[in-house]
Image (cartoon, rainbow, N blue to C red; front, side):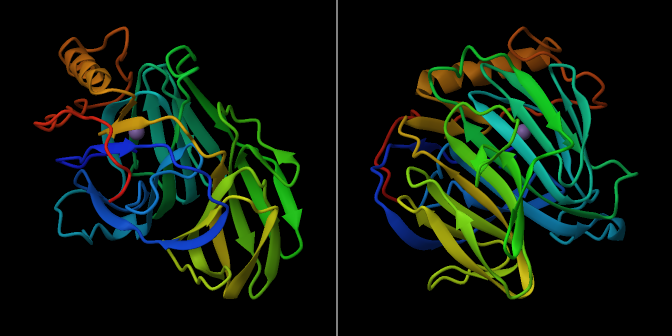
Length: 336
Ligand code: MN
């Protein structure tokens, strides 16, 4: 997915000290993407910019695409309709609970994103992709779009890549099972490429059950509830809410509501590099973002460039970048 906001705010990350276990409820911000999709944005959050290297988390749906009734007072088709747009210095993780999305990208990939299958795109210095709900897609669409920041050591040198995994390892726990998207949970490791110590998992807890989830003490974690609700200490995150857990835990006890619970577990070593995030770009400096934007706009005019090759097979125009803000994109205090 793309950050299609008309006037995206500059987001500057600054490093933070690890602080041990905490419990904080992070609420979503409603964002309309383009004309057709409304999402709940959990990261960046005004209280927590990142969880490990996870720097962006949108949760959307479940939406019934067949109704073709625009729930958001925006005329147009239902579902995902994101034209080719660029990314830099990050990985996109596309994860569906229901539905289907067609993915195309500038390294020649054409894939259907389906529930329980991991689609991970490593942008490096530049990649572009499109994401579309086809008319043939199942009626319900429910998913998450996540970004993982790449560390400076690899972000310009790793080869732009798209990987799809139809089969992922599962961890069976007493009262729950976890599909490991990336990284390791309880000794079960995903084959997906990761460039910092991090983890992502899709966890389903049986109705009313208490599950003890194994964690890594050096990681910070959050859980994003996508079905039912959880009791986490004194917190009770419900649908579309995130509970931030901090660092320093070997495990955590989670209690599912009487109708069960499903959540994404996101975690990783606190990401200490400062980031500048603007639109669909991640960089380290103002100049870098300006250059990426210029290169993307030039690639649209040229129908593809070395840095941002054309997204083959997409029927339509690429997405122009919005204007840059009038001020320099620069590091600033992390406080809100
Ligand atoms: Mn995208």
